[in-house]
Structure formats: C-alpha cells, structure tokens
Image 1: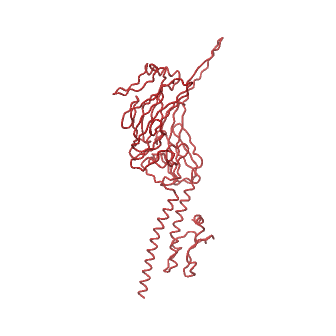
Image 2 (image 1 turned 90 degrees about the vertical axis):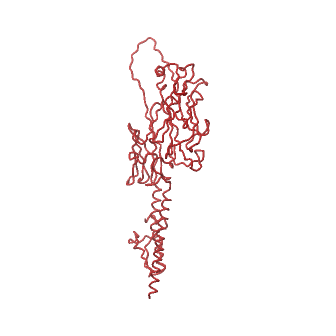
Length: 452
C-alpha cells in the first residue's frame, strides 16, 4: 500500500481531530513518512462528526480502497515469460519449462483442453518464478504427423501460459510445441573381399518430393488463409515439388487419400476415403489433378458446433512414374461404388521393387494444413488479409490467442483496465454510502434542532 501511495505522489496520513484547525481536518498527500500508527488505515482512522469539514474525510475512504486495485493491476502487468521456454522431447511425452520475471501465479493449459485436469495446471499458490507442464502423447489432443523427408514422426501441441487468474489477457503467451522423432535405418556389416580388381560402386538416389497442403482464398493462385467465415469459398491445394534437371519429366506420381477434418479435440470427420474419393459432396468436392504432383478442389467453409478452429489432414502416396502403365500417373476412379487405383502390376509387387530404390516410395505420409479460424455467419466483417488481423503470438504459433476452443469462454481485458473497473465500482459503492450517511445525519441534526 505504501508503495502504491508513493506512485500516486506520496504517502497518505490519518485524519486529525476536526476541532483543532480547519486546514488540518482534510486528509492530505505528503512526501514525508507517515507515523507508525497510520501504516494500516481503517474505518476508525476517519471518525465522522456532524460538520461540513469532516465530511471530506469520508472521501479518503474510497481512495484507500481504490489504491490496492491499481497496485494489483500494476503488479500483474510487470510479469512476463523470460526468454523462450525449454522443450524436452521424451520417449512418451513432451515437457515444457519456462521462467517468469516474477513469481508465476497463473495457469498453464493445452488449447482446447482447459477443463481436462491432465492438460491444465494451476499455479495460483506458486511462489517460484517458473512453471512446467508434461504433455503425454495419448492425451490433450496431441497431434501426430508422419513424414518421409526426413522419415519420422512429429508430435505437436499448443500451450497457453496465462498470467491472470481468471481472464485471457494481452500479456498471456501461447507456444506451438513440436518434437520430431527421427527414424534411422542403419546397416552394420563386416566383409572381407579378395579380388584382383576392386569394383567401384556407383549409385544414384533421386530426391524425395516435399509436399504441402494449403487452404487458399479464391482459387489455385489465391493466398493462404488462416481465418474465414462459414459459407466462404476456399480452395484446397495439395502440391509436391523436387529439383529436376533440364526440365526433365518427373519421377514421381502423387495420390491424395484419407483426408480428415477435426476440431483439435475429439471430433473427427472423414471427407476423403482411403481410395482418394470424396465422401460428402457438401463438405468437399472430387479432387482434380492438375499434373503429376498437384491437385486441388473447391469447397465451402464449415465448422464444428461451438468450436472455433478446424484442422485438415490428408495422406499422400507417392509412386514411381516409370512403373505405371504407359508412363501415366494413376488416378482414383470414383464413379459409382468402384474406387480403385489402376497400376500396371500388383501394388505389393511394385512396393517391393520400389523399396530397393527408397523405402518411402509406395508408403503414405501425412500432410497438414494450417489451422483455420472459422467465424459464424453473424460475426462482424473481418479483413481478408491475414497480416491485418491482430496477433498475440510467439515463435511459430500459427493461430491467435484471442480465440480459444473448449468449453471455457475467454474475455480479453488488460490487468490495468481491470483494476480501474474494480476501482470505479468500489468508488461508486462508497459514494452512495457516503451520501446516505450525510442525508441520515442531516435529518438527525435537523430533528434535534426542532426538538430544542
């Protein structure tokens, strides 16, 4: 309290007896240190007496109650995360540790899983300037992504560090955590070979394509979208690329299949089956291939009930173009109920032959689009360019902190503004009490005068 009083211009002193001198009856703000007995002001420090001057003493009571609220707001604003959190990629979980400027007394949770006790840690009673959280692979909606270049598995989640005990504010941080687990294939051997001429081994290994899944606005040449409104037209684009020499013909063919959309929690919906054919024309149309390694389709934006984000995931299957019939890349046949990819030979045989070139050829791997924030039809107009949206992100966070999934509802307000709101409410309450007391004593004084 004394520290906040100095911020307001000095320290408060208790009221003196109003019967001494009129100038000293009003509480004042001074730069000197108050006497010991006034360190903790209370109602007894401001006795009410039926005169014009002591009434002003009552105005000091709301001021003393306003100052703690302002001090609380200033204290909360000062806390923040120091540097970047430390991530440990363990065999069964991902651990994140962070250090704060002041003792951390907030919350840490996985976005969309605030109500799950395994995905939410409460640090309200913490006295250390640090915090941590362990995220198990099979909980909290941990996302998995298989890759082939390099070959391995990526585990990811979005962690929110909230400093306020109740609200999501502009000072909170959210982090997109990713751990990549590499799969290595090593051959260990020991040979002794005696020969007059030592043969020289010549081998060539073509590069594997790098594939991307994008949700674009307008069409195949539109901009990547991070937010949209229900009913907007978007374009789903899948493309793979790799370096070629002299513009030569491609080595690989691509087929998109097993596409799903989810809300980041438990809801999961299949939109493209394992053969590469759409399952719900209302959600997504048939995929059209515009080359060996490019495909796309137009669709209308949709969302899950009471959820803000949608996540799209598809699988890509690569094959060698030279092994296909007439050197033409196979495409899904989705007419009627027959969904079949035509290959020149059995898929198992082709996979065995391809494995000699590269194990990843013939296998499917995952590609994920960036999460899309979907607004309802009655939401206000939004800008179309992602860079014009307000951001509160750190590192590689792909989404905004202002929109939270899950059952909890977040209200964005700064701690300082919250302090002023509390102060205004307290001031209004005690002003009403003050005028009630003044009216009461005026009536009482008038009654005594009439009786005399």
